[in-house]
Image (cartoon, rainbow, N blue to C red; front, side, top):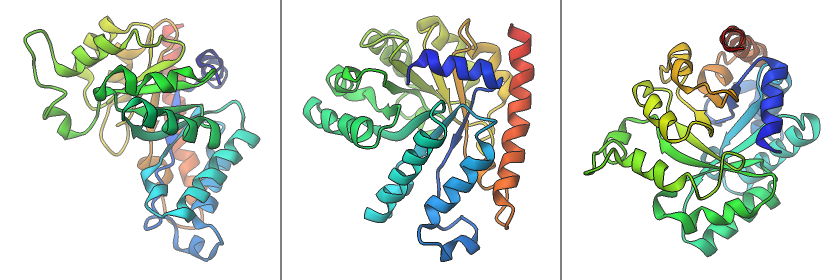
Length: 273
């Protein structure tokens, strides 16, 4: 799926919402535990009720990998279901891979060929040869960690060099490895004060912005600086949507939360048109 296709879907749905399927077996409703595949049953129910309000689903692979073979099977069933039932929805493997070139090539094959995700998140701090293998795949997107939403970003990313912040130097160095058609950047919604600087460096790239919802990011505040002429943002919300409740109506409650965010996004988009 091309980024231009994603933009069309955003305009169609009046939404730039990405829903994170960070599915934790310990948090899903108890009544699902009797299912053959509780993780997939949970995901399918969430997807069926929320797909009208979002343009992307992001699967944090750690929640699936931690369950071994069964977790990988649940993840594969989930991505296959999205691709078949909702082919216009952008899919993200939130795997945060990053290794030397030949290993990165295997990671790229895993998520782009075997699992058929549209995109994958990558830690670019090992340099260009750890990212380039992901850029060799047509109609796929590499999403580089730019400035993350966690408190630990202070440890390295927000340190200052003689020139600039480490995160800014990384984005500046990496932006020409690909282009705005095949690369995005992760920028945490909890750090809106740095978005204007990031937009000065990469005005045209899409930003994947986690941190709205449970982590406290403010939608209106980040949009003030992050939106560009091509919309240019995906705002991810995970826990506040998928765990909106834990009863029999968990999927309906998730849809209500997704709808609430979509309505806010529709208003924001109406202001920039």
